[in-house]
Image 1 (cartoon, rainbow, N blue to C red):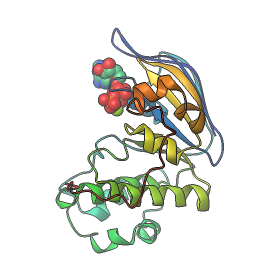
Image 2: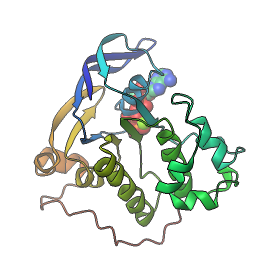
Image 3: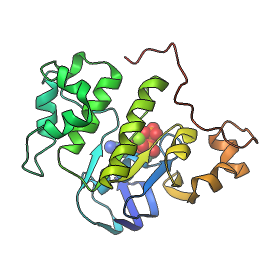
Length: 235
Ligand SMILES: Nc1ncnc2c1ncn2[C@@H]1O[C@H](COP(=O)(O)OP(=O)(O)OP(=O)(O)O)[C@@H](O)[C@H]1O
Ligand SMILES: [Mg+2]
């Protein structure tokens, strides 16, 4: 579905990606994990064609759509207009499909995106990406700033897209535990290089990965608990 070989991306003199290789097969859910500044968003922006690589090769089979970091909605446009803006590559501007997936957005369709909660905005951002009917969905920071219950709901939708529509998903996620629970394989990227990759179960049991990304626990990693509640707000 997606093949990236030895990708190099620079911002002026600074090298943000230094020979990154990665693969996603059909129907796979793959996580991309790494610290701040590792180059995760740079990779997604390069896959989306926003950034141009200095070297390397990439091949995308079908259409790739990105849910950008920070959601990047137009706050003064309605939910529906934000969704329509995602359809420019497919020509089909009917948001009906997205409302069927996220029935909650139907009720909010005339609201300005800027007035929505964080979780609702993330739904709009995912919905907007789906408007182009992608074969691969790349999500940059799904859970950032959202309460666990809201995240669990978004995860349920991503799983549905993956299982029922066969959509491949590349998930950039700060919460490695969550990423490992959702995805089959993961790549760990640090300072512009892939430092580890493999099945999530394998990675989750590696002492280095545990120390750096799973809070140092040497226990078997726990399943992400969808029933976990939190007092945090989603705004
Ligand atoms: N527009 C830009 N101009 C110059 N340098 C940039 C630009 N965007 C990112 N960088 C640099 O490139 C490197 C990778 O940044 P990137 O945003 O891809 O990291 P990230 O892994 O997504 O981090 P985070 O987890 O904080 O989102 C960082 O050192 C960053 O400072
Ligand atoms: Mg980023």
